[in-house]
Image (tube, rainbow, N blue to C red; front, side, top):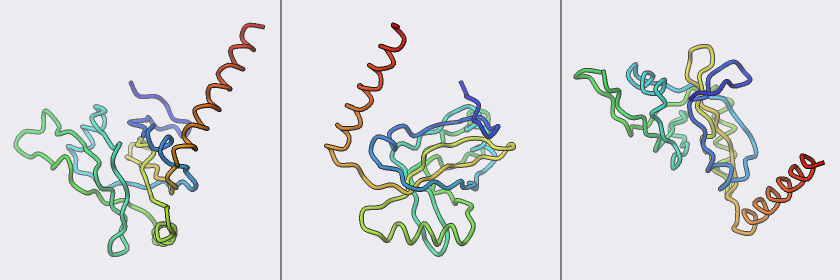
Length: 155
C-alpha cells in the first residue's frame, strides 16, 4: 500500500485535505521524535493527521492532533496515540516558521509522512486558508484539465 517517493522513501500517509483547504506557500522537511512502537505502527500505515497542525513553543516545533494507533504486538508498554510530538528542525527553520505564523492568516500544516533512509520524515507547509470561491475555482480548473485530457486521449 505504500508508494515510492522520488527521494527514495516510502510514503506512509498524505494529507490530501491540506491541499484542498489551504494554499500551500512554503515547504519544510522535518524529522519527528517517536517511540519504537509508534514507528512500528507507522510501518503498518496506522496514522491519521487530517486535523493536525504545527505549533511553536519555547523554540521547539510540535505537531498537535496527529493520531498514531497503538501497535498491536507491543505488550504492556503502549504509547499515547494522541500525544503531541516534537518536530526536529534547525533553529533558523523554526525562526522562519514563527515569522510566517505571526503573519495574519498563515498556519503550518502537515502534508506528507514518509520514510527517508529508514527515518520518519514529515513534510510540513506554511499555508493560507482558502475561501469558498477559491475552492470552487480549483474544482472548476481541475474539471477543465480532466476534459482536455479526455479529448487528447480520444484523438
